[in-house]
Image 1 (cartoon, rainbow, N blue to C red):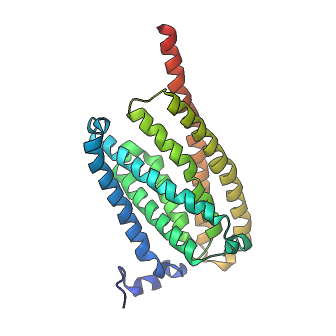
Image 2: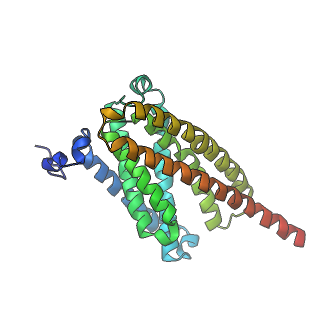
Image 3: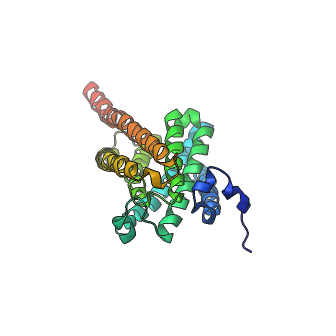
Length: 266
């Protein structure tokens, strides 16, 4: 018998017994969270020896630095697999209940990442902010609920949210490595705003509305709490996206307004 982290009886308890695909992937979720924490620790160790900018940061900001390394790593994984999700026949045929072994594996790894993200955001809440804790918990929940199995097709929307995260991380590192107001940050900032607008605000909002409609029509086919909880988390993420976008616009523009002002004074 293969080693299992959790006793099989735990999956018979409510509400886990509603997530019928969970027993085969719970261990992968935990292993994924541990893997991303190893990247977090390794990133800190390497940065200590390779970056003077890192060594000059406070302990909380060092944590933020390593969080962005892990975030960048997951974003690359999410974008690659999110694009593959768009061409899977089972998901196209049935956006609510279409599923494959491949999608279950990818969503399990993503669930593990957001489990880690939630816990690390709580640990470094003074650096990340309460909104990031809420974001991590909401993402963890929508991915965790896919083990009904459910909404694997909508998983691609959340995975491709990470397109903008690539540019967000670059923007953050530009600030922390003395590149604020540089040409690199300007070009990256425009890519950040454009990708965030399309993938999170436009496509994300469309997908959220689509889910609310078709999910409501099929709500009796899943446990009573799954549809409203998934919808609540999706709406929370949508609200956070609009809130963050307004902040991003001010943040990106301020880097270059301050630079222009400095030039005029000179």
